[in-house]
Amino acid sequence: MSEEKKEKTQLLAVNDLTVEYSARRGKIRAVENASFTLDRGETLGIVGESGSGKSTLGMSLIRLVPYPGKIMKGNIILEEQRILKLKDEQMRDLRGRKISYIFQDPMTSLNPVEKIKDHFIELIQTHEPKVTKAQALKRAQQLFKDVGIQPERISDYPHQLSGGMRQRVMIALALALNPSVVIADEPTTALDVVVQAKILDLLGTLQERYGMALILITHDLSIVLERSDKIVVMYAGRIVEQARSTALYKSTQHPYSQGLLKSIPNIELADQKLEAIGGTPPDLLNPPHGCRFWPRCPFVMPECLVEEPSLYETGENHLVRCYLYKGEGNE
Amino acid sequence: MGKADTKKSMLSAILPGLGSLAKRGLAGWLIIVGLIFVTAIIMITVISPWIRPYDPIKINVGPPLIGPSAQHPFGTNDLGQDIFSRVLSGGGIMLQVSLLSVIVCLAVGVPLGLFASYAGGVVDRLVGLVMDSIYAFPGLVLAIAIAAMLGRGVVNMALSIAVVYIPSYFRVIRSQVLSIKEMSYIEAANAVGAKNRTILTRYILPNIMPSIVVVATVNFADAILTAAGLTFIGLGVSVSVPDWGWDLTNGRALLASGTWWVITFPGIMIILLALGFTLIGEGLSELFNPRLEQ
Image (tube, rainbow over all chains, first blue to last red; front, side):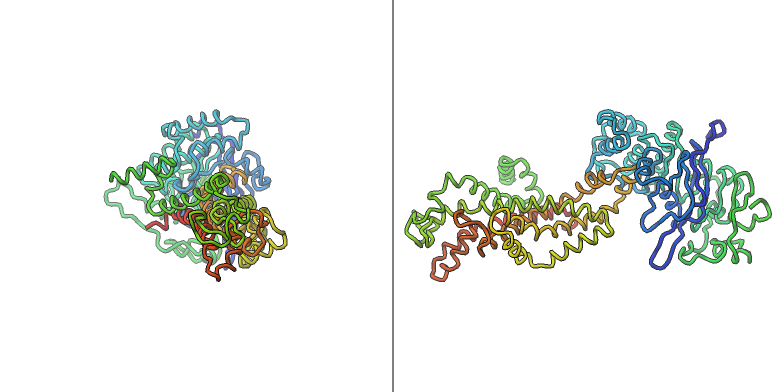
């Protein structure tokens, strides 16, 4: 992508964000001290396994962390607006207009009793009350062309569309008001591989056409390596590595990211051995003392068990939470 | 094959939707039979002023307490009133009462259930508590108590039945709202900034409509029985209006002396009407709930 040529202005800044779920047995910090930034038109990949807090991070950006989750501290700044300080009404207005969310499961993300076109009309008229039904419909039909569905299908009910088509509809809905950032939370998990690639390509193309920023949340590092500008790797609620994707690919530093990379099959290597990361993610009610990854880490050192490492800067915008890189850069 | 086709085309000639109902198996037929009972009784009641042989409230139109005959097909009661005429006209009050009570229930129970369970928390708890305490009473006893306080009349009867029945609506709606609230299309609607009002009216209400319709038909059947019960114990309408419930009260004392016809024919009508609504309700709930299908 030609991000060097584009004017780089900061769109979104997340600072020290901590999200907590209160369970009966205690508090779970699903996201702890997360900080990152996103420029206009940029793509950010958030990678992590199940329970790493990546979806919670995504949901907190639109302030819809599911109950009993709560944003404990930190701030999120979107286009100079402090999102966490906004009133509920203001936030509601922002959703869909400035920031949209595409969910994992397209099969159940559309209202089964409403025609597709009514979803669009309702969405557009909610945010732009002056738009007439006919105008909204026209815009929806254009969006349908953009996402590659015949405009006639707009009068169908959700059950009449296939899973891939429904995800295209979800994308069209997310783009309907031309938001500055779209969050796609595992947008292809429920779809088969061929459709997956198509949907991701479509997201890329539309991102360029509409000039929006994209946050791609996934468990599949290979997807974001080729499609995003920046990558944030999460493990057990922590950002463990954060870099531009080219830098991350050239020098993967955190042992967890290395493990993720080694588990991706590569068709160019004939005798590649796929390696799995041993063990299971930690129970966040009782996280391991010290670094959260040490029980599974091949390079574990005594100091890892004592205290959690902070993020060390090992290169330009390359941050790693690991003692292996303690001497290399600044804290 | 040919027979089935004619049957279907006959049905669809009566009502375009009936033909497709017949294809839905048992559930469809339950609805059709129920609809036939209910519409037949409604039609009879409506046109009764023109088809009944005698004035139903006029006394001594024939000798008192004679059995069914050509003159009086269903016999006469102790006042010499024609039972057949009374059966034809006697459904009016019950139909009015049950219709009015269903309307009141829909107007109060549905919004209450929707708002309370969507809002959740304290509101839900409080409304739920009130509803549960009403629900804890035996329905007929509570209706009798309220009707006794309010006095006679169609509106008062309807109100007392509505009070008894609103908790049923609340329960059904609440359970549905709680599950639909968690669906991802609600989450998705929230994520694009839909207003609460929109979510309630365009996302949740249409999705729980099938359950509401089922409860309403069951409510109809129950309202008819309760209305009959209220009239039976004298809390219904005045004697000057023909009513099956009143005929039951009157006929009860006469049954011991062998005059079975005074109580039997109005009783059958009440059963048929309640059965019709129950069949519709059963059929609809089976039709709307695919999980019950074998």
